[in-house]
Amino acid sequence: MEGDTTPGARPHGAILRAGVPECVNVAPVECLSASSQSCSVALSAPGRWSYVYGRLSDANAPDAVAGAAAYAAAPDGVVQGIDAVVHMGAHSTLEWLPGKSVALSVSCWPDALIGDVPVSYPFIVNDAGEVAQAKRRMGAVTIGHLPPPLGQAALPEGLRRPEQLLDEYSTADVLDPARRQRLIAAIRDDARAAALEDDLGLGASATPAEAIPQIDRFVCDLKESQFGDGLHVFGRGACGEAEESALLDALSCRRAAPGPAGSPHRGRRDVLPTGRNLLAVDPRAVPTPTAHAQGIKLAEELLRRHLQDHGDWPKGLLVDLWASSTMRTAGEDFATALHLAGIAPRWDHGSGRVSGYEIIAPTAVGRPRIDATLRVSGLFRDVFSGLAQLFEAATEALSERDEKGAENPYRHRAAHVFGPRPGQYGVGMASMPDVFTEESRNAAGEAWLSASSWAFESDSTMRPHRTGIEARLVAADAFVHASQDLPETDLLLAAAAPSLYHLDAMRLDRPHARSLTEEVSRVVRARAANPKWIAGMMRHGFRGAAEIAATLEHMAAYAHLADAAPVHLFDLYYDATLGNDDVRAFMARENPAALEAIETCFTRLHEASLWRTRRKSIAAALREAS
Image (tube, rainbow, N blue to C red; front, side, top):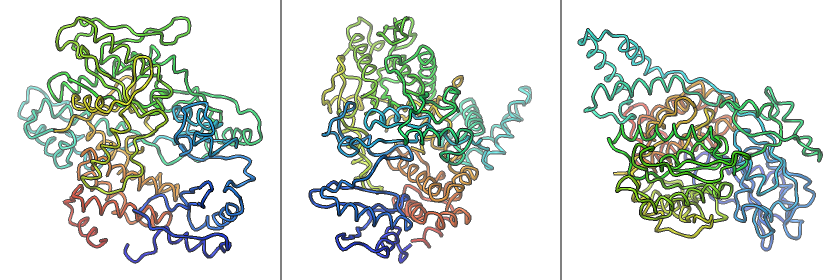
C-alpha cells in the first residue's frame, strides 16, 4: 500500500542497524516490481567475483553483514573457509548457468563458481531430470526426499447441484423424454452459471450429445483430482530419519547409498525409503516397451480430442518435451510423438536399449501420419540427444517413402526437432519486466523463438535455424504439452490461435487430453481455490505464503501470454485468498512481501483488462486498495 515500508526497506534498515564495517558501502536499489520472494543482497566490487543472495528477511541482517565483511577482506572476493555447500530446495541457479553440458572446465560458469567445494543437495525424489543436471554440472550428491502428501480435491460448492442433476440424468428413463429434456436444460443452466461451459468451450449451439458428456467428465475429473497437501519438511515424515542420516553421511565424506528417482504417488514404490543418493536413467533405454505402449494411448487420446474439437485430423502438431517427465515416465511423451508420425522404436533384446526405429505401414497406422515437430528443453537436448537424432533420422526416411499426398506430410524434407543452442537453458523470460502489455507479449514470444531456434540434424549435431522453427509454427494447428504425469504438481506450480492441448497422463488407464483453458480451470477449481490447499500452505509460514502468491502469478502468465485463464477463475482465487480475512492476516504476518505481490498482481490484472470482475464487492476492494 502507498506509504507503507517496502519489503526491501525493512532488511536494509536491519543491516544498517547491525553495524556495517567502514570498508563496506550499502547501496539500496529500487525494485522493479513487488515480489513474493522477499529481498536480495548483492556483493560486488571491481575485479572481484560477485555474489547474489535471495529470499532474505530482517533476521538475516547479521549474516549479511558478516558475509560482506569477509567478502571485503578477501583479495579476489572469494570467501575462504567454506568446507561444503548444502543446497535446500530444487532447483538452484548454479547448474543451469552457461557452459558445457558435462565434463565442465573452469570456463564454464558452474565450475568457475563452485570450484571443488562439495555440494550436498536434498532433492525431491520425483524429479529425475533435474537430479541429472545437478550431478552432471556441479557434481552434487542428491539426497532424495519425499514429495508432499496428497490431498483429495472436493467438488466446489457451486458444482454440487449439477453433479446431482447429472446423476439423476444418468438414471432417467429413456421412455420419459420430457423429463430428460428438463434435466438437460437444468444441467446446462447450472453449468453456465458456474462459467463451466465457457471453460469447456461449449457454445450455445452445442448439442446435448456434445455438452452433457463433457460437463459430466469435467465434474468427475474435479472430484478425482489430487494435489500436494502442504510442503514436505526435510527430515520429517516416514523417511525423515533416513533423509537426515544420508545428509550427515555426505557431509562426513561417507558413502551415501544410491537409489532410484521417481514418484511414489505414481506407483514407484522402489524409490522408498527416500534418503538415498538419487540415480537418473539410462537414456539409451528410453522409451521402454511399456512406455511405448502408454505413448500410443496418449497419442490416440490427443487425436480423439482434436477430432472432437475440429472434426478432422491435425495437419501439424508442435510437441513440447522436457527431460524430467521423459525420465519419470521412461519416455511416454517421446513415444507419443513417434506414434503420431507412424514410427515405432526397435529394441536390442539383449540390453533392452533402443537400437533404431521401424516405420509403420500406412495401412497399419489407419490414418494419415501427423506432422509432429518437437521443441525440446535444454536438458533433453543434453541427455536425450540420441532420441532427437532418432526422430530426425526417421522423418528423413519418411521423406523418401512413396506414399500418397495427405498420408505422409513428411514428403518434403524439413527439420523436426528444435531446442536452445548448446550451453543454453530455459527460454530467457525470467528477466523480463512483469507487466501485462502487448510489448511484453511480443518480447515473450521473441524469447521463446530465440530459445528454440537451433535444429538437430540426423547425426545429432545442431545448427542455428530460426526460419525453420518459424515455418513449423506457421504450419502447426495445435500445440501440445506432453505430459502431466504427477498428481502432486500441476501447470500452475511451475504458458485465430492454434489449439493448445495439455496431456494428462496421471492415470495410466485413462489418459486425458484437455484444452489449456480446461486444464487451467480444473487446477484452479480443484486445487488453487480449494480451502484445503490454502490451509496446507498456511502450515508452512513464509514459504507457504510465497506459494499462494506464485500461483496467482502463474495464472496471470497464462491469461497474458495464452489467453487461457478466464476472468471468473480470478474471482474464485480472489475469494480464496484476499477475500478471506484469515488468509490475508496470515500473509501479512508471515510474508508481507507475498501479500504485497498478490495485491499488486490482482491490481495489474484489472488495469490491463485481463480480469474484469463482475462482483461489485471485489471491484470496490480493488478501488479502495488503489
